[in-house]
Amino acid sequence: MVNEMTLLRAHRRTAACILCAFALAALTSAALSQTPAPATPAAPITTPAPANAKLPKWRIDPYTKNKPEALSKAGYASFGPFPFGNLGAKAVTTDDVEKTLAYLQIHWIETAHFRIGIDLPAWNVPQDPEIKAKLRKELERLAEKLPGINTKPRTLDPWLRAHLFAQRCEDIYREFMQLAMVTDEDFPQKASDIYVPVHNRAMGMGPYLGMKEKYLLMLFEKEGSFNTYMKTYLGRDSHFGQRWHCKDVGCILFTIATECDEGRHKDDTALHGSVAFNVSQNLLDGFRHYSYDMPVWLREGLGHWFERRVSPRFNSFDQNEGSPADMKKEWKWQPYTKNLVTTGGKFAPFPEAYAWRDFGNITFNDHVAIWSRMDFMMQQGPEKWSKFLFEVKGRSSTNGTADQSDLVGAFREGIQKAYGFSVLQFDEKWAEWVKANYASQ
Image 1 (cartoon, rainbow, N blue to C red):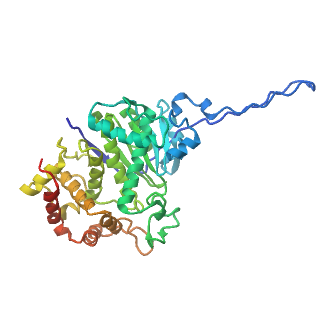
Image 2 (image 1 turned 45 degrees about the vertical axis):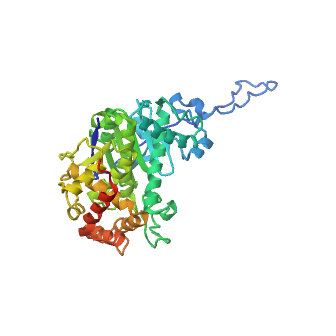
Image 3 (image 1 turned 90 degrees about the horizontal axis):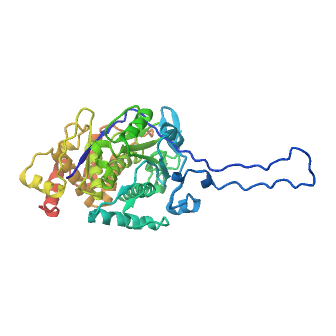
């Protein structure tokens, strides 16, 4: 039985997050005699205790042992504390989150491009051959960076799950860069370096695809903890995951609990898919800086495309508040799409869909169609996708400010320049490709 999720989106307020404190070392001093005693040698100065000796056991990663050299080999910057968004005009850190949620044992990991907080329980690996094969491949890669990894575990312990999600986030980031045909060096190291010489155009306001700060991920087990965090730092509560632009500090967050959406994210594969769906959209928003919203079809289509590459059995759907997403449990989208285009099934034509600015009117058939259109675009090669992306994202006026005028027109021109056909011709080209490439069952 396939479960499916909805996801609320908001950009009205800046969000925050934040913290995790480590007691790193204890200072000791030599005992001083209260009376003169020249014949008695002074007490020796003791060596400060190792940092781990003062940490609670749950904070010590059993794989790296919290050793700096092991963290470096894994590609990590730290296990905290580190910045984690903002609350109003105040920048906050992982320590602030821990003060708010003092009853949790949050595992913090900072990678090259992400700051991550994980409050997940151990997860028993099911006997499903596909899931076991997926995890084995992930763990074999992880074992190349971390010592002591069992590539065939019966259970994923909390620290192992944290490492897996750190790797998964970096995988999404790497693939996004490959598709956009960019590298870290293509983006400014500080906000004043808006124009990067190699591109001779604005590339954003920071090194993280154009954002000033690293992308944020916060995963909870309990919906109650998730909503405490949401109310404290985002000023809202929800039964669904949340993407959030932390405008004042220049980063973008995704947070969710495994109990959200009736608990479907308790399954590690479903949670992985949801992270792919939402983090890929955050990267799209952040590309060349988050200055304006992308059209619904592009954001949602990209999210579907990344998520279904994790597993086609779990599918996420964005929705507006008060306007639930139209969802079905059908997960075999290739034959479903082929049937739509060969039988004249009902879905919005591309000249209508590409101008959508709202999730409210999207039907299940529309979701399938925009996923498939994105699949079609990606299969034409990264050169075309990259050219299209540069045409529509990060547009700036002559004075350097963001240009969000006539976005529909910009997308129309971007399709023509990158793919060589018009918006009116899009569905014809796409339908031909679907008929030639998708299975019927």
